[in-house]
Amino acid sequence: MRNPDFKFRQFSIWQDQCAMKVGTDSVLLGAWADITESRTVLDIGTGTGILALIAAQRNPEAQITAVEIDAAAAAQAEYNVKASPWKDRIRVINTDIRSYDCQGTFDAILCNPPYFTKSLHSPDASRNGARHDDTLSTDDLTGIADKLLTENGEMHLVLPADTFSTITGIVSRHGLQLHGITSVCTVPGCPPKRIMLSIGRKFSNKTKDMLCIRDSSGGISGEYRNLVKDFYLKV
Image (cartoon, rainbow, N blue to C red):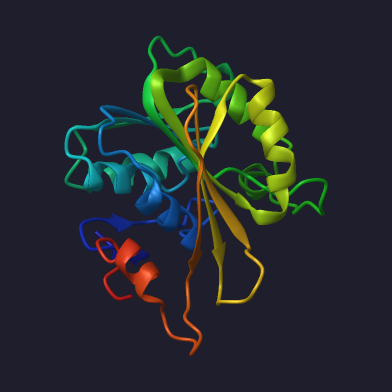
């Protein structure tokens, strides 16, 4: 077996067949999302399978469904899952989540969705599907959450910070509520680049906070280190 492209503490990722590679966004979201009480988890657009694998590591009771529209990426996610300690708890399905005929609901939904809107496309169709929201918009995702979440379930997303102004209206239109908002900035004092959101059915007092990846001296911040230390080999 060849060496993995990315090695975490408890699992490895091979990613040569995936348009979108392992990045900070997925690791942050996987570490941040509250899935402590979740027994069923859905990972939408699993790509390499990283969010599903992080969820399996964090919650030993969770049964995880990982959906991926791209056949090559789905096959690689399946490979990564089978090489992990949790192959019996993660099921990879190659399908479009918008037409997925799911017979159940989920306590948690995780997604690092495509986020470029009306921007220049790549000649690579797979990369376009992974990066652009032409195929899966935030409105689509929120509608899926409304359909597939359990009564007390939550969807957890990571999105560009500049999309936040549109999120509240989309969430309300589907009869859902924003539960948690964490803005992610590179260093203190800089505008946030990403937001991580938790969305559910029931009213909840929104929690809002800020996470900086680096501290004022340019080193890795303590809060970021504490969040991802169980996954990265070095941080």
